[in-house]
Image (cartoon, rainbow, N blue to C red):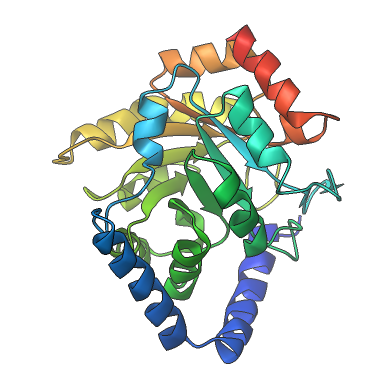
Length: 280
């Protein structure tokens, strides 16, 4: 079977280089620095997340991270004409704890404009979900208004992941580290804010919710061996569609639940989310 992740990363490297030709790294650094200085001027730290996704999930009774996604590489278009000015605010109204917004264009039909559009319309944290391999993408996330970024272990070496985590924190962004197997637990560092277990195989894009349950105990053991000031919050990603599954995952130690297709495939994603939360 074709390895979709390898194809995505190969294209991502080309895409980033093209973006750097249009807007240089130094230009983005200047924009981000200005934003952080403005934050300091308003009485907040430029390196402290304005909206903490980790705290929002910890304080939530549902822990739902509602995802805005138009398509996927394996299933094609899910909601081609989905509007970022409508669905994210509907998610917040329905009770989402945080938002995940896909910004990959070629494979997922997303764009950074989706975060820029949604940001002034919602008050909950926004996760930039993309295949992040370069500091350039962290700067983009900060500038468009994201509060957190996804770092996928399968896309990075442990050292690259650690470096990007530190750089994200310097920009006032939290990090959701995504793992798929126990072999990737070595990517967890004392700076890790959240650890997500993806139930979708990124090579084949086949989903199996049992992946979270299978990894849970080893994941908690790995975290217990690290001297955290505050342990990372655990998130289960993909393949979740029923309140009962969320209750079972909570019992296994998870506090965040990233869900997208369950909502996006319906006529009214916000109402579908509201019904699910009532079911929890």
